[in-house]
Length: 111
Image 1 (cartoon, rainbow, N blue to C red):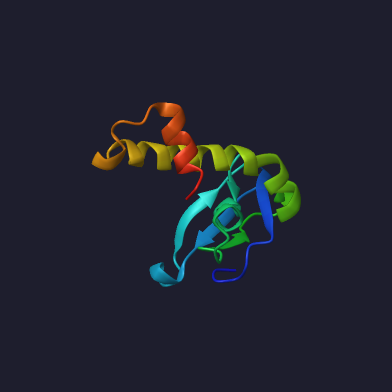
Image 2: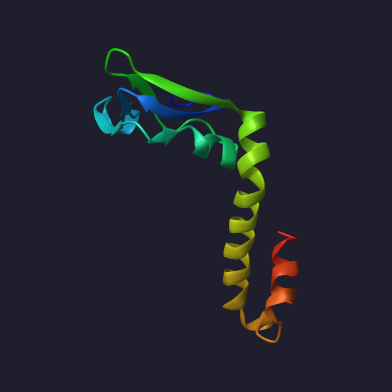
């Protein structure tokens, strides 16, 4: 449910799920089909769920990963992406223009 703490990552295996938000007055804003996924944002950013997702077809099924399992598999890659974004931002800061890529990467890991 939107606003709840994230506890799982879901990968739609079959069927469909509807995505609704309070901002849309509860209207469907997206439909998840096989191969689509949801729940990652709350886990990666440690923030409340951004939407409510409900099954909309009979026989729908999802693979589920707990927070612990999801972060163990995806967390290191997400950390690397976040660090690369921080390093790119630092590249545009005049104070850090003289740093090479390795130095910027090391500095980015401090944030």
